[in-house]
Amino acid sequence: MVNQQAQDAVQKTLDGVTSNSDTGIAGLVFVAVDKQGNEICAVPSGKKGVNHEEKMDLDTTFWIASCTKLLATMACMQAIEQGKLSLDDAEQVKKLCPELAKVQVLKEDGTLEDKKTDITLRMLLSHTSGFGYEFFNPKLRDYGRPIGFDVFHADERDILRMPLVNQPGTVWEYGIGIDWAGIVLERATGVRLNDWIQQNIMQPLGLENINMLPTPEMKKSLAYMHQKWPGQDKSEERDHMYREPLIAESDAEKKAIFNSGGAGCYAKPSEYVQVLAALLNDGKSPKTGAQILKPETVETMWENQIKNQPDFARQGVPAAKPEQTNPLPELYPQEGNPPQGWGLSFMLTQEPGPTGRGRNTAWWAGIANLFWWCDREKGVAGMIASQVMPFGDMNVLGTWFACEGEVYKTLS
Image 1 (cartoon, rainbow, N blue to C red):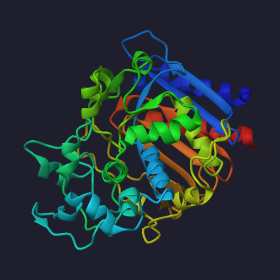
Image 2 (cartoon, rainbow, N blue to C red):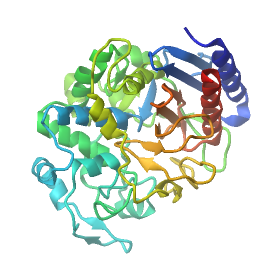
Image 3 (cartoon, one colour):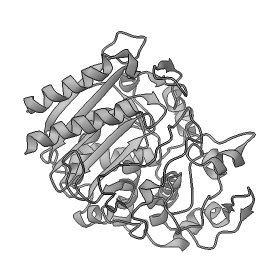
């Protein structure tokens, strides 16, 4: 049963954005759940595309991009529980992925040097392995040219040919580490990452609309992708950012799709939040009763992996590819600049946030301006979803903060 106060407040907030053509946001979906997995509010607003009249609804499918990282990490943690992987066994990673034994580090002058430390699964899952992203790192972007790198086309060749941008284990930098973690899982188990996620996460949770190979029904309900070109506020419809899985029809075509642990999933937000509900309950679904992770595994995921870098999220994010990301001075502003942390695949706001969230709330995002949060202290989680580039759209960010705040008002 939704909370009508939250439902009405969120609807008003979303409609204020999607009805204003100056925002460039055609449509949004916001869903929040409590610890029982019940929806506090579930609100669609606007249209699936700026040039189309089809209304956004709760069955709309979104490419969730880096919101996939949580799912891939949960898959790796399940394999650890089964004894098939280890967080800190560098020799295991090297044996499974000899490419990682040979990968070199890109220096500021554009030359390569040998790495000084072997890479572990923990490093891959915590973005301390030394890998970066070409759309956030100008050094990596330039190194890849004249051909260039593009991680958004379901082809592992770009992943396999990227150098490191930092020495392993030295600093946090957002990058392709969780794509590599998915490759580690596949080689250790002989199971494709998407198949693992379907069998061990989605099926136990009773979820049918989160997939790296979207079903025909998911494709029919796909939201349009939008673009704001640099210097423009209004958006236009654009070709989809992640097309290959959408056009794969035959089994052979589907087998050729790289199962990207970093960005490969499509989902309905109302189902994604049920994954978060299981994490609110120490790995157990409040709806199906399935225990998909042990409580101690969830605790491990929530441990801060970079205690020596409390200001890692305040270093600023450059717009190396301005059509894909806006420049961001910091990832999650908090008054007084308290220490912030990073768990296994997500950021931790270690002190209460401005919206009312509790301590050690996990959150992360997808590049097409999707954001989720999971507050285990207060027992609430949620997601806002859009399909607009570049990342860091202030209209979506502001709407997320406002809607999250409305959810916490009803809790108090």
